[in-house]
Length: 332
Image (cartoon, rainbow, N blue to C red; front, side, top):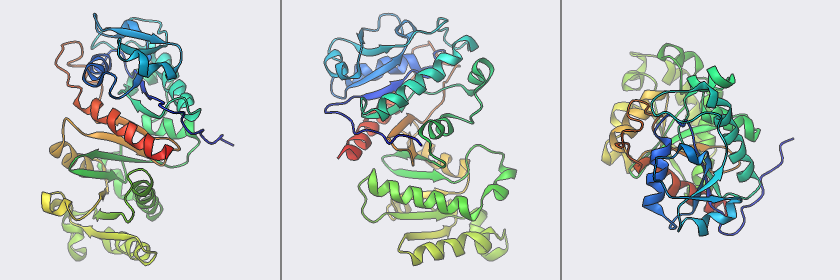
């Protein structure tokens, strides 16, 4: 049985994993520290040698030292890697260390030595080739480490919170994967997280249909009539505030977004196109259903621009801010 997490100690900082060292993680981490300084104490778990040259580093031996160290440099809890970081060039030799950093961070959060977890992007191909990593991504690996059967991915920015029910799969596979049990779990986890983590007493959820025009009465697909609408009716009977199934093409304009606290989408692009249109640089990935708060910038490793000094840290800064807010709410 998984041991429940301990509450964080006073002034516990946010733990930030290094992610793929060949990507933009090192440079946006340094930029985030320059933006935040001691305003938001966080510490990096990774190899200080991978940071951009000239980055002020304040090595720490324990997370509790991060707040004081942040005035001198980027607080780093050192984790040695076997190979140097070459921007834009993956090295599978570093894969096992990337995985170990994630495991170490989860342990620190569950022990209450860190307030929340924020993760830099990983490269699943490098982890698979170099460490036999068998998980589809960060989210599933974190659920495994936490002993949680099912978690939900939320994308959030100032103007929108949206949750895809199915995530990384071919569009042709979505109708078969979209079961009543999966949709119900997604709705319930989202509803509970909005109450617990976002302090929304009575969450309002807008649920998209699968097909164009939400099926248009069965003329463009039957999933809405056969599965989605009956499930929503049943959950409404329990008191959940649910709108839908709605045509996805009318759910995301400004006036519509004022009518709900989060949108439930049926598949990846139905959720990610609006969030990346509305808040491309500020979007944050939040994992709902974990026993600790976890966020991540809503972008990948960006190997094509790594080391060129043009990567923006906006999403990472937003992810660190949200990690602290969620962690503090859970601590209270």
